[in-house]
Image (cartoon, rainbow, N blue to C red; front, side):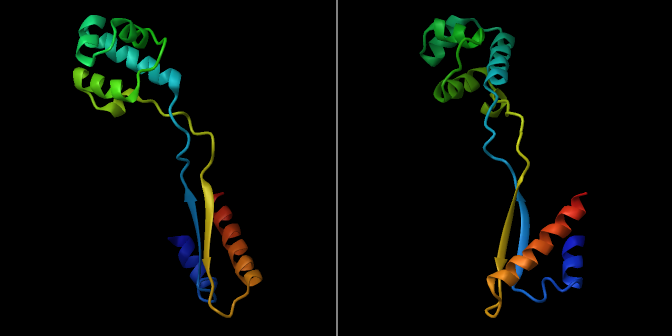
Length: 137
């Protein structure tokens, strides 16, 4: 908000339609498969239920449950959904997000007044980016 006030005081917003700079969160990091397998294994082991009991309720083989328990394979979404009901936990509790390696992307949106050229718009947006980066440091 302080940056926006500064931008208005410096005339950047006043002389153009607008120039918005925003960070977009990394949403493509996915899940950490190894950590997710480990968590599923721990939750199955903590339940105290044996492979046969779980397999009968989900309608898979006891060997499939054993592979999940021993981290040899990852259950399908359908099976995780059924397993969440058996264990009495939300599906979100199974998954471990992958560490985010990417910094948020910077998106620039600009809407000029009719009389402004693309070069003028770019110049204002470049100034906006400089002020934003200075603010982050």
